[in-house]
Length: 441
Length: 160
Ligand SMILES: Cc1cc2nc3c(=O)[nH]c(=O)nc-3n(C[C@H](O)[C@H](O)[C@H](O)COP(=O)(O)O)c2cc1C
Ligand code: FES
Image (cartoon, rainbow over all chains, first blue to last red; front, side, top):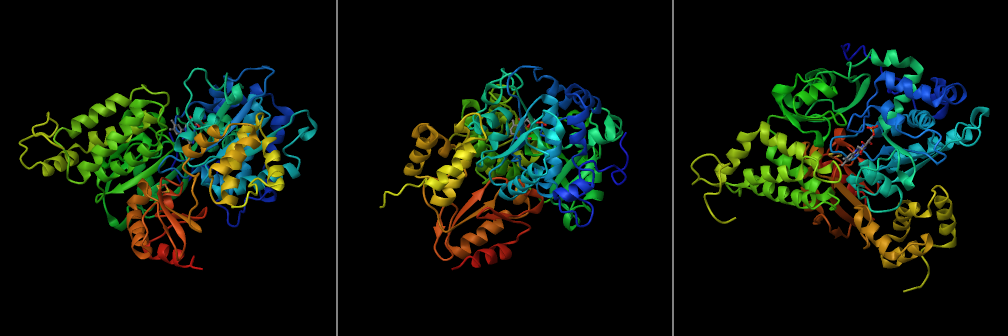
């Protein structure tokens, strides 16, 4: 099991916790920076690195928690084609702001981790797709890339070998869907961000039809500590199925919101009370979105849940990006759900009609319930709608992501919805979930 | 109106080096559009046509891209762009009060432009600053941990 959060190693943020660390190349190298990159290129085989990452048990930090070493092993060997690594820095999931910390404060860690990852999959070109709004984080990365080229850490014939590597940043332009890996590839190619049907999978047919791996910023950053400290050290933190640390971004009604590197398996209660100094204004906890809005919410009684993939799944939600959104007793779940419905309605790419229509319709229903105009049949219609657009019926996972906060809000806070409908329909006798008893809107 | 081209020789040269980063020059479309919008103020039909010609693609393709991405606009805006996050974490921290205060003080609604200070106001989705809300972005610069008074002051300071 995991140790207490205070004693847990800080694989990613140890430098940031030091006073005065500015993230320049000189400072990063003084802290052992790029030694693992050198080691990879000069003395390790790609297959060795993939095995090491497999042994570490590292799972993707971009939302789905897919085993990273396994993903890398899907890339063809000796394909004779150009391979690409795309680092996903789209970071647009509501409640998620952790990659930005690394991009701004320790960009060389991201570059070194990405470089090692690229070497493992045989990629000589990396594109870091940075959401368009992250102007400053992208500047930090661009500056770091330039420093690394000037120091001979990127470019041709690295460390006296035949290996070469180029890294470029690429800006998005405000579309959440471009964080979805196949939409990201379309967007990188200069098109609308419409997700592609899978198969084909990116490892076989990715960016420009070439073998491609897409990984989150935090995922690739972990490559350095795994090489540096070994798979065993990485596994000694966290849980069996969710090893290592995770950057938990806490927002909402706590005293000290922010990004914290914590061992996987830390209880939400500990994060709220100890890491973040408790609830703001001494209020009680009402509910929390576990790892970004698309993972769903849990009520306060579930705050004993630990932040690892298995534990949260047992409660019917997902770990996602570990963007923990904390809500106090005064929060309206209906309002929170409406705010999110507005988001999903705005961000659906529109390719699949269930999703396009489902998001808009959901928003309309929630909106009228919130405004005291809910119809007795609304909760049933809403549940039917969710049923209709979720469960893998669409090209990508966007609609299933949207279904999570909707479903969990209905499940855990049923009375709140029913109460709102009842207030809007004083003539109504009983359960608002029944078929319509009145006509009109 | 002058018939001067938007893509000057200098810009073309800059964009050529962008194109070299990719196996297909069309991939440079997003970075190019960002740059043209920053210089030209918006991506009107003329800008779209010039970019399409430069990349060897059609204006229809470019138009499809411009209209897909929320950060691109076809019409000019005020001198400044003010984007207030309305998504969940910021909403929990009172972003609606902040937005209302701005609307009241400067008599402007989201989607509209006011004159002194001259800015276009928009309410936007999550900006990746969730732990530091409420927040707004002014011309690409993040202002975090705001309250209504601080936000209004920042915008007052934009006055010519
Ligand atoms: C709608 C949608 C949005 C997504 N946004 C992001 C994102 O902003 N950043 C990210 O890393 N992954 C995002 N993902 C997950 C990616 O598709 C992909 O699984 C991930 O980048 C893989 O990296 P990992 O294996 O390192 O986690 C999103 C997925 C969906 C369905
Ligand atoms: S919700 Fe406002 S920045 Fe994320």
